[in-house]
Amino acid sequence: MEQHALERFAGLAVDFSANVQPGQIVAIEAETGMEPIVRAVAERAYERGARFVDPTYFDPYVKRARLQHAPDDTLEFVPEWYGKRMLQLGEEHAARIVFVPRVSPGILNGVDPKRAGRDQLPDLEERLEIINKRLVNWTIMPFPTQSWADLVYPELDGEAALSRLTEELFHVCRLDENDPVTAWRERKETLHSVASRLTDRRFDAIRLDGPGTELTVGLLPTSLWEGGSTTTVDGVEHMPNIPTEEVYTTPDPTRAEGIVRATKPLDVGGTIINGLEVRFEGGRAVDIQADTGAEVLRERAAYDADASRLGELALVDREGRIGTLGTTFYNTLLDENAASHIALGNAYEITVGPEDVPNINKSAIHIDFMIGGDDVQVRGITGDGEQVPVLVNGTWQI
Image 1 (cartoon, rainbow, N blue to C red):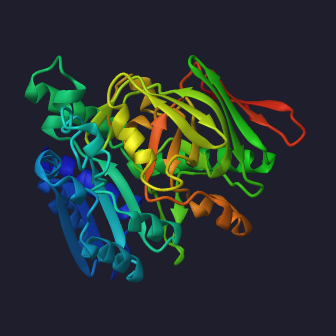
Image 2 (cartoon, helix red, strand yellow):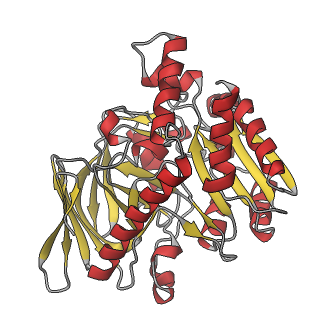
C-alpha cells in the first residue's frame, strides 16, 4: 500500500475512530504481515500526543501449529499475563486499535474442528470486561493482506486480488471520500437516529422471517438500541467498528425461539463455516448444523454455561456500503455490517438499563453470524402482541 494510503488509514484510526487522547497509552493489535499500518498508526499516535504505543502481533501459523500438534488438554490454556495486560489497559484508560483479520480466514481449514473450537486466541475474555466497563476508547478496522485477498477474489491473480481488496476496503471505510471523517459523522447520526426510534418503541421482541429463518428474539424491559459511536466513562467518543452500519441491542438470553439460516459464510478463528443453520429453544442454541465447519461453532457454543445463548441482536439496512458490493469478505467485521445478525455469548452492558445488567448473558465468547438480507423481513412485537414492520426489503419502516 502506498504511503499516502497508509496515512489516510492511520489518520482515520487514530484521530477519529479510536479518538486517541494526548497522554494515553495506545495498544495496537494486528496479524503478522501488517507492520506497515502498525508503524503508520504508531507515528500518528505519537504526533497526537500518545504517551506510549504498544504493538502486539498475532501469528496465525503458530496457532495452526498448536492445533495440529499440542496436547489435547492444553488447547484452552492461556498464560495469565495475556489477561492481565488487557485488564491493565483498562486500568490505564488506554486506547486500543485492532486491525483484522488477526487470523487469516480459512487458515485453519483442514484442522480438526473440535480442537479448533477450543482455542479462542487471539480473543481474550478480559477484553469483554473492559469494554463493558467502558474503560478504553477502542476501534476495530480492516487492513488488506495477500492471503485474505486470495480467498475473497480467487478468480484474480495475487497482485490484482490485493489491489481489489484494498480498493473495496477504502470504499467501505469511506476513505475514498474527500473528507472521511465528515462522511462517518453523517452516517453515525443516521444510526443514532434509528437506534433512538427503536428504543422509543420499547418492543417486547423482534421477529425475523426469511428463507430458512423464522426466529423470535425477546428483549429485556430496559433493552436500548445503539449504533455508530459510543463513549468511555471519561466521555471520550469513539467508533468501536469502522466500518459500521448496524444498530444493535442486548436481548433477553432466555427468550429466543425458532430457526435461523446464515446468509453469509462465517469465519470462526480461521475456520470457515458454510451453510450454517441454528435452532433455538428456550433461549439456547440446541441444534447447530452446517455444510462445513459446524463442529467449531458447536465447541464454542459449549465453551461455558451460557455460550449457547444470545448476547446481541443487530439490524442492518440496505444503505450501508458493504452489502451493495455483493462481496463475501469472510470476515465478521465486514460481513456483519452487510446484513442483520445475532451473536452467541457475552452481551453488552451499554445496551440495557442498570437494573437489567444482572439479567444479561455472560460468557467468555462472543460470535456474530449473519442472518439478514433484503429478503429477511423484520418486525417488532409490542407488549400486547401487535407486530410492527421495522425492516422491509432492507428499508427502515420506523
